[in-house]
Length: 444
Image (cartoon, rainbow, N blue to C red; front, side, top):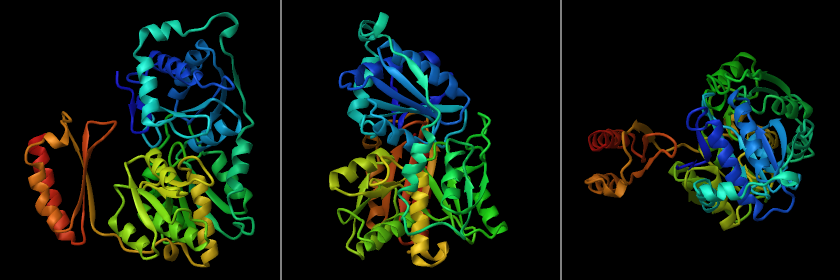
């Protein structure tokens, strides 16, 4: 059984991710982590989905069955789990969330004792144990070796303090009006608290989760709600998080959504000017616009590209000795502050940039123009290797000859193929995408 996708294990709760599968996965993960155990403790957090109750209890059963003590901390952002796992000296951390997906889905993300997401090789080892029935039976414990579980409700303060401490001590948010969309997700408590304690006038929306309304027409996937209220309340900025708060979408004072690549570019130059950028580089994914790379090169900053997924961004950051990177989708990583993409930590850095500049968000966060780019998703019935699809390379050659950049990949979680085409001439890009769509419609 194939478990891990691009970001942990994710699927429909109750079918792909049912209680028995989760229990078995927890046992496999516990057996894996136990080999390098120092504390015999694993931290478990979740977002606000109803299915989180089922999955959490199944995880606890599986982990205690192989001898782990479990600390349950309830609804908290994904980056909080990364931070608290290391801070509380746990062997591992587990976040129950399907991020920006609708409530019907759920997922499980694993962190090691340093608060880093597991690499592909570690995931393969857990999956191998999962499929080894003998190991699953023989590694169970009995008697006094069976683990215990306890719930701790006061760790929220530790995370709030850690995020606030990342904001420059000579600045505050007094006089700023901010619209914050919590997506009815994991940041519904910590988000408004952090901004209000720093002095902002906060208008909070979608902060009343009921188990089913997470990401529903709100949050980072639907920033139009924030955009409308920014204009209505004449706010200085709008901030939209996703369900597990590792993603941030910014809306300027005009009600315009700030492009993710422009956000990365503005923040990178801000860090560089403040002499806080390490490695004279930035990491983005293969999805990022070429205009970002060209913009950064003017300041002799090299853009390194990774595969899609914030854990891949972080891998390249570590390899290249870089402390800043992100995805155009809203995952922004300040590795000096957080172990993974952190929507709230990113928001504070955006606010610091605006305050330092003395300008409005629309001026600061629009540093360059994007090249025309089209992204199209197509449903497919099968996923044959791209290199084996006859005629594809021949089709791409004339597009590349015109200076266009292409990226074609399958979704890691859905039966879809994702087509990206980009170039400086809008008409060429549009025509090229129509050619690609027609080709794949016939080929797949």
